[in-house]
Length: 232
Ligand code: C5P
Image 1 (cartoon, rainbow, N blue to C red):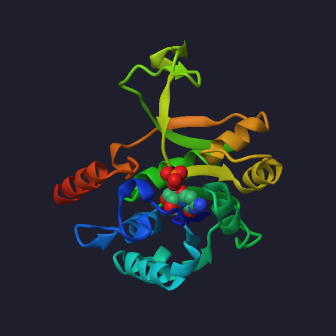
Image 2: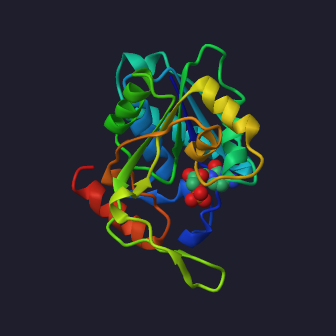
């Protein structure tokens, strides 16, 4: 199993000086938090971090720091790589997939911005893929009523809330399916599962985790700090 952590975004909504992946919460960069949890998952053999092109050394430092925070036999045999990302998230994912060894069967794609997603969530996603589902995403029920609007802001539809899920990462895939989905992608999608959906293949949603919330705004950083102080 391989994990591809995409960390090449600018994070402009966070208002930080540099890329979001290197913003610190409780003294540790978001990317380091993400690596630490990913490499603690039971099945990982290969970790690729996709970083901003001018920050590869900094990203390698986060990989080393994240691994140093975890002890065990899996980490000892772990192979890592740091590669430059592209202009859009999908380009960055493809850059990560391009360096995976041929024998990798299951790939998890994870946003560095979901820095506190726990190792148990990685394990649950991998288990579902190995259980025969070609694409698996964690998701939580939504609490707000969601409206679809047109360009003028006028509501076009109100999807039934009980059937909606806010999906997270890590998203897990049969490797051949994910490669095929990205190769067939004519335009960008906001997650990898959407590309698999376009192939007409089923995507399973398993229970997500509050800790996998996406750190996007300064308020999200505050929440992450609170969660860490409470032992996340
Ligand atoms: O911008 P967005 O919220 O979709 O970013 C989700 C994740 O994708 C973040 O971890 C970000 O670093 C990553 N990303 C990337 N390359 C891009 C854009 C986003 O690796 N060009």
